[in-house]
Image 1 (tube, rainbow, N blue to C red):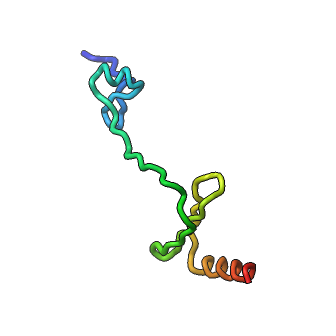
Image 2: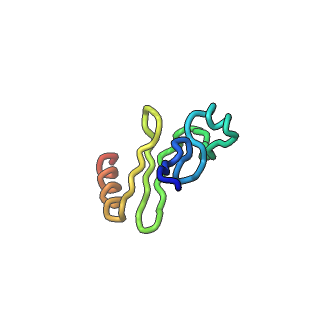
Image 3: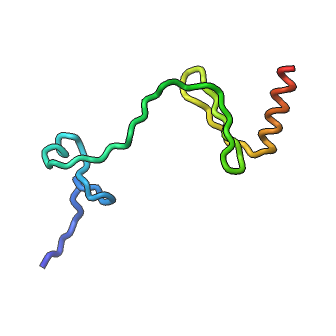
Length: 88
């Protein structure tokens, strides 16, 4: 009769795959699936897109990366008015 059942520390419970260093995974002939890596081709221009009922504004940052802000229609109008008053 088995009285002591413990999970194997090298097997990830959610996937059943071997976890740990690459050496351990290589020795056991199993590896993790890796997420797709997208190359960073630059931060791109300022852009605003309509998504669903709102707007998504992507602002490139000086040190790299982007600031992403989601706005509803009222907030987008207020932002537009504020920017217009500063520029003109």
